[in-house]
Length: 123
Image (cartoon, rainbow, N blue to C red; front, side, top):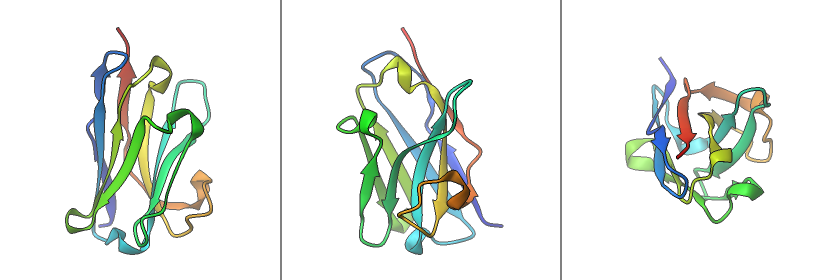
């Protein structure tokens, strides 16, 4: 069974850090683009960051540039999102997803989704 499993969410104070993990099983991420999306209550799901596993190209939402870093570990078939200097507006459920088209950032372009992990930034 092919699936993605996220972990690493939690409650953190403003300015703090978290690292999210997205582990794939049942398929290899080698040929995929893996993206992190987030969805806050009452808002649409938005793309936060993506990485093309072959080649290592990355992209970021403008509001997280310089604070978030996406990376992949081929040996572990896992993608990470390091989030530093977190702000209350980063509060959301974060999802990882895998798709084949790096240029297409629409959620509908992604074939596999994780269950989501809650990130709450609050003092």
